[in-house]
Length: 409
Image 1 (cartoon, rainbow, N blue to C red):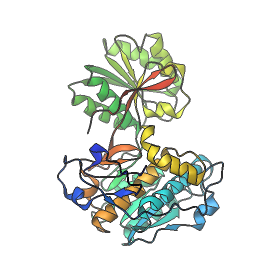
Image 2 (image 1 turned 30 degrees about the vertical axis):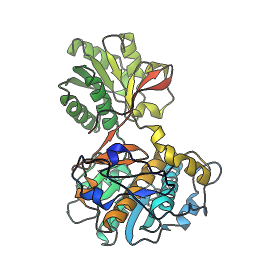
Image 3 (image 1 turned 180 degrees about the vertical axis):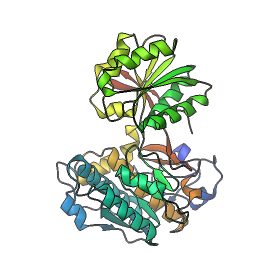
Image 4 (image 1 turned 90 degrees about the horizontal axis):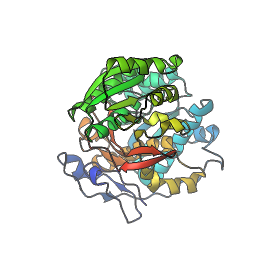
């Protein structure tokens, strides 16, 4: 199945049956928000590249990736910043993103983009320098990356309205003007899950979140999502991973009477200590709903997750690219592959529809959004992203689909 990325057609999720990849239709970009179902135009299909392929055990090697740092011959120049030679999982994820970018170029971008990939080495300072050079070079029409959080945060603080947009791949990056957060954040997942339960009638919510700089972002997103449904965030309770969860649950009991739902964010840690303390109090139960986040799923499914609701990415959305990717690169694609594929495909779509000068706020902040292999998403003016996700319940250690997607934007 061909992957489809559309602006005005995003809500309908049009899918090509021709075998050719599809890109954005020029009319779709200019269409007023809400006019779904615009046609898509077939792009020139490129053969899937096989040189320098991944090994049978995983992503392309660092040496192979660094040997081929320019992909495509198109007139629109895009720079991509990836930690190709970084040690450990950082480098492995960077090379997975490289492979995702290669597949997107073969599918969509080969004749539309010249994609220059630069190795950040996983060094935030070096990544920042490369990114600043890219956005001030005058040649790059867009920058994809970096994946280093500190570098992305630095870019978000820079002023200047004429610089090219940055599609940052850093995890848990809040975004900034012209520096867009690509990845699903815990704040997005928590807010979508809370909104879904509020939509079913729950009105009083408690948020438990690890103490730290990210807690305010999670709190703000959840509170805003609840307000749409007339629900309220009664209290936010920061917790320390060292207190075993008992204190924060005890504080909830003394501060809030009869909450309808409890949202538990976990950041980089495990939620199990808090979940064990909640379970001792009968949560989840008949009167109190437990809401988790996508960060829970970064660990093996724990029995304490049972009964919780979680909004997260739909793995089936990756289906159109997963088989081709596995056949070409000899390993199963993950979310790193999908994010990289989507951003290169988005760049190719804009280049096809509007040319090299089409990378502007009107297009990127289109309120209808885009559908990619990570589902339906859109970028906001503050640089944050919003996603419409499936809603699941944990039953017998598995995610059981409750709703195909949470409420729209």
